Image (cartoon, rainbow, N blue to C red; front, side, top):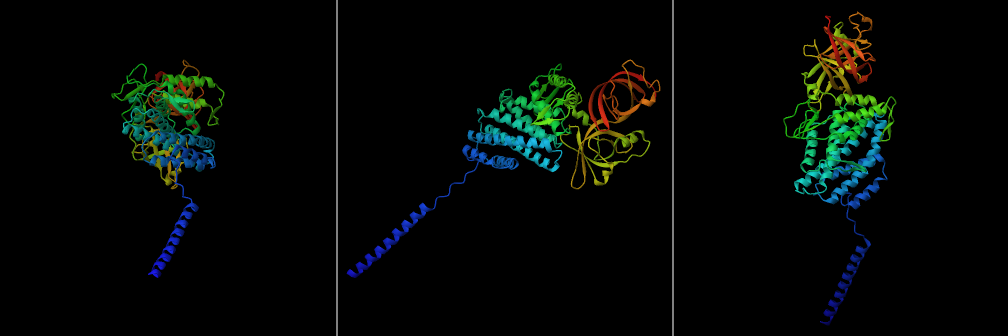
Amino acid sequence: MTLAIGMMYAQFRIDYKNNITTMLNELFDKFRIKPAPAISTPLDSLTTTHKWVEHLQQLHEYEAHQQVVLLLDTYNRSKVPFDIQRLHILGAIEHAGSKLQHGLITQFLKNHADYKYAGKSLWQEIVAFYWQLAQAYQEMANTILHHQQRDSTALPTMVLRAIHYLGKLIQWRYFRYELPSAQTWHTLHKLYKLAELHGFAKQSMVLKGSAYCSCEQAYARILLLHLMRPVGLSPSEIELAAYWAWKWRESIVFSKEFDANMHSHCIALSDSLPPQAINGHAVALDSARYWAINDVVAQMDRVKSNTGSQTKLIKLYGVPYADSPNVLLQHIHAKLTSTTTPAENSVFDMPATVKLSCGVRSILNAFKDTAPSPQATAYYQATGHPSEAYYRLSMAPDDATCNVKAHDLLISFDQSNRHIQTLSAIRWMEQSASSTITLGMERLGCSPQLIKLHAVQDAIAPSPFMLAADQLVFVGIAEKLATTLVSFQHMKHKYYDMQEGDYIYRIRIQFLLEQKPGWLRVQFVRLTRRYQPA
């Protein structure tokens, strides 16, 4: 019995010792191995966002910008309920990305012409940043409204920034000849309507740095830039036009009541259409908003008079604007003061497959019918909203013999292939990997006809056509009863006689609308008319 008790005691001491040893080893392991810290992301808190922004400074500008876009994409995909910290996190990302965006835009304006593929990559990065921010602010505004947080003080800021970044997105898509879609217009009108509904449309708020803007002004800037018809302009021209639209935005004031003596344009908030000229007629929609363009034109004239004959040094993102701004001002003036709506411009029947002739020689031969002109088949496809005047024509590789050049003129024939249907200008062209050439075309005239022109000294000079002075006559193209014409020679005089069919018109040149290699387009006024059978 004593022996059994002793053996049990000995076993107890061994087990006790082993247990103590095991406990001490486990305790030692806990102190020796530090617990892994919890994985944090830049979106967890404002502190982690600031640390992430500091890390960006170690990266190359382009790489850092990519990281910002990726984080914004993650931000938009995470369905986190709205709180004020989430808004501050977005603001920190936006602030850091805006500095990088400025550098990328500077590079694009400097080098896009010399580095075609690099310029396209820069454009994609710039557009992605604007798109992500527009989506972020739209989503946050919707979240507040859906959760009935209608008294949130952050709502005006979010709506303003959503309009602003959607406008920047629209602007930069003009660079790639992309017009706003119907869905884009619908979203933009909805945002402004939201600002009106909640009473902060005219409230001035900080947009960036010391720049203040209201939702109405941000909205007006987008509409104004679109009315300038920027598609086909160079990147520096679009950027300068956008700068002027920002400067002149305060001259646009929206009204629900139509004033025939003052208002010239309107927008329908319940529709998906771009702004339109109204030509003195009200729109039968309660959502119509009217405004006048006169103050903008007056400011434009002051810019032109201050510029004078010398090229004014203008810098866009630190990049000097090398050309004279007067040419761009003439383009903008012609578009803003046009009384023809884009819908009227584009109403003509163009078949799916059209026959084209391009180049001055081929076009003149087609009008005169003196020799067969080479023709190319193109496949018509509308681009942008149907009410826009720009169209996309895709030419098959075997039709590249048409020798199309950028800013060239072309004519299209009707289905009979005997009558000229339209005169158009090529605003842009691209060649895909399959060698298919895609043209962006703006119609300049429907059923154009050949005209004869002769310079005269003054408004009361005798007509050179009556004196048979044919040696100084040159030809142009005009639409019947139109106020614009295309000439293949310089028009340095103020007065001309224009022979159109059986009539001779004394005309006065008002504006040089555009001048391209090989042709120019002017706006004129008919002063007198004389019947003279051809």
